[in-house]
Length: 175
Image (cartoon, rainbow, N blue to C red; front, top):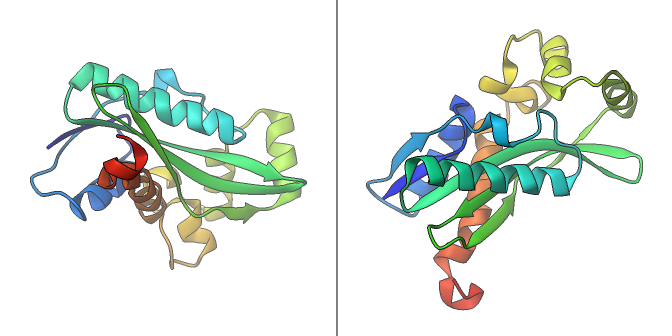
């Protein structure tokens, strides 16, 4: 099975590998830089969904294969509470798209409000807080905040696993 992945981020690619390998054998991942088709800092679930879907479609269009996968991390709010979350989109050559979420975790309100006023990305703030350069390509902010109990690869795996559900139950979802 050939899977085009709309990112070169090694942590997200690992999450895709972990998820697909739970259900399929002989999976070949083909990472494609799809950063040009998504916002640098998605805010809100709609932007995250759009970014994940654009990444999946772009990767599949460039590489071909059985599926295209996009994983988009971003920030969303419920009332005045900020959360970090990842959304995965999986698309097949016919254009059918499935979606899934990772666990979300709370971010500090004051820091997030300042981040958006300054027009900065969460990655820059995460580097400052964790002291790790390019933390998003490593364990992620979640690894720092959870004191090593959860990683960004695990969040990527979660959202891809939940996005795979319609493909595993095509009869129920009409796929």
